Length: 193
Image 1 (cartoon, rainbow, N blue to C red):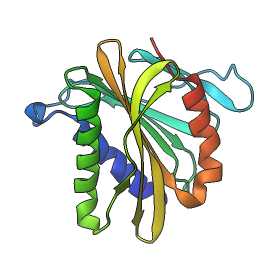
Image 2 (cartoon, one colour; image 1 turned 90 degrees about the vertical axis):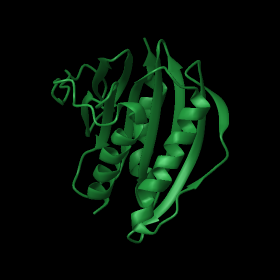
Image 3 (cartoon, one colour; image 1 turned 45 degrees about the vertical axis):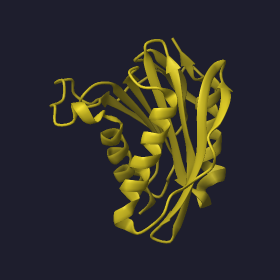
């Protein structure tokens, strides 16, 4: 159940990140694909993701899916493997045509709209400025309950060359000890190229 909800959330968040004036356009024809990388790392690493102007270490036992966002941009989703796992680290790489504050507020609004059918409210902390691997970013924490499960995570936005990066982490609170090492590895190794 956790994995199904997280997958639905990912599909929704990819669609929500497309700008309103580009909705309805068809995909660029580039097919969605997974990256397979040689494991040349220690036991905590699966390999390195290096595409779309970003790079990061892939945690062991996590799967990666990436592709084009309809209307422009790319996405990368790193998911904890296993049928009852809930960890997901999603990255959207979008054309840099909006401010960070505007993008963060749009993501929060879409998050709230996406949860309306469930009857659940998403709670956000105040926005905060931070330095994320020497990149200026704006972020906030989020939490909500769905079908009796408590979820939490973070939304973070930053500039990366000519693009804007939107990072959303999400996982069940009951899985925090299993998810945090993977989230931390990606965070520590994330680079804008």
